[in-house]
Amino acid sequence: MSATTPESGATTPVRPGIDPRGPRFSAAITSVLLLAVVVLAVGGLDAAALALLALLAALFAWGAIAGVARHPFGLLFRWLVHPRLASPVELEDPRPPTFAQLVGLIVTGTGVVLGLLGIAAAVPVAAAAAFLAAFLNAAFGYCLGCRIYLLLVRARVIRTA
Image (tube, one colour):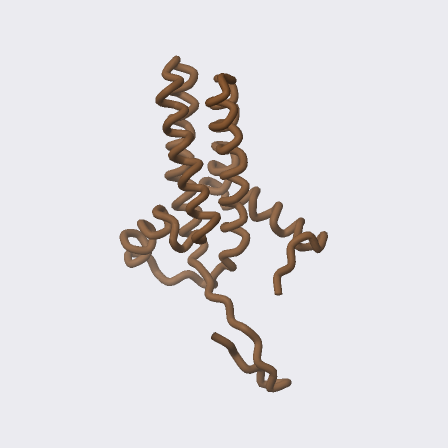
């Protein structure tokens, strides 16, 4: 898809946007599940905590690879919640939230790997770190992974064109 600018007549690619409330909805669900991992781990149910953290890592991988619009929680938002809301004022670029999914995968994946290696404390620590980020997004709309993405773009580590 492309658009022509009236001033120059040049064609520029148009990137589809996402409803900014979708990632916050997903972050709310993720926050609850990550908090459950912490509670299970602290309660001594290490195997259940590790299994749930592994599921969350897989969901982060899904979001990082397929994009937030195709993430199961994103689809749930689009099918069940979005039709009941007014249209957003403006759409959001999906690349920063998709990168945030990669950051979540790295954090939770590290916790899973270390948990499988017998370092049980890694599971609640990784879950707590991911919970903090997800909660900030869900409650306040502040996406740490998105901020990291923007810093990397400004440092020219990530190219946007």
